[in-house]
Image (tube, rainbow, N blue to C red; front, top):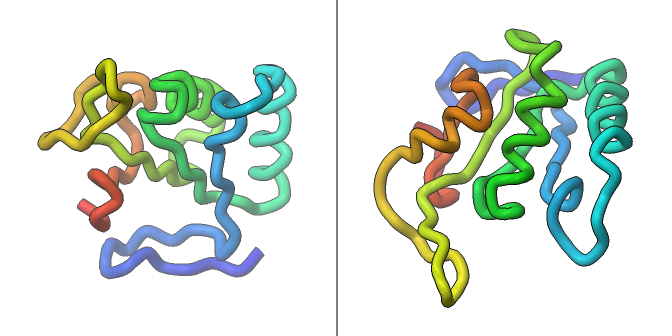
Amino acid sequence: MEKRQLGKSGLEVSALGLGCMRMSFGDKPSDKQEMIAFMHQAVERGVTFFDTAEVYGPFTNEELVGEALEPFRGKVIIATKFGWKHGENGPHPSVGVDRAALSRLSAWLMLRSNGCGSR
């Protein structure tokens, strides 16, 4: 698998990343164990860059991705988008680091706030 460097961060990731939104969020429910196996297979094939967000679920996708990739700690990079408040009218932007997101992902990740670039 080809690799790419993320900006000036020094982080190196696979050229092909895996977006995980539909694994726990969307029109049709996904089987949790099947999605964990899918992420494991992706890593075995060289994928090291995974994308999630607190708004997917909300929260359940970060939990799934954190659980699935725990055995690969230090070998993969997870990008998440956070900074959303969840209310009656759906999610809307807020400001600041969401400590709960860090907890759901076991605090070992690269973070991106509101899709506005690397932090």
